[in-house]
Length: 46
Image 1 (tube, rainbow, N blue to C red):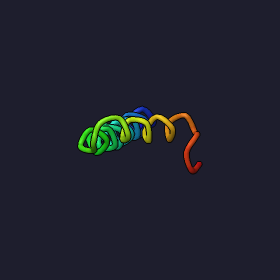
Image 2 (image 1 turned 60 degrees about the vertical axis):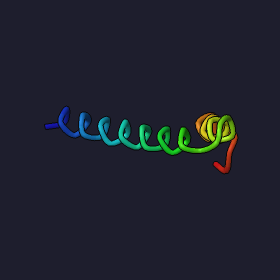
Image 3 (image 1 turned 30 degrees about the vertical axis):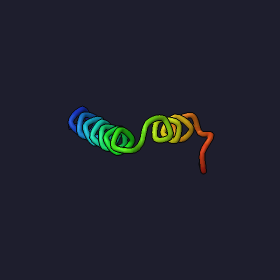
Image 4 (image 1 turned 90 degrees about the vertical axis):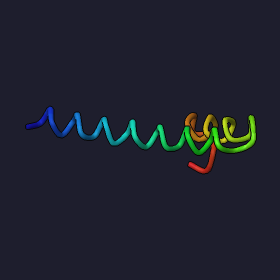
């Protein structure tokens, strides 16, 4: 049961990351990638 919860959480995280990457690629060029990079490294609003 525990591994099922872990697997589900992993799928949710991957889906969210794919959604974020999809939104970034829909934006103009480098600015979206820089926003995602700064968010990922904690340099953004975190």
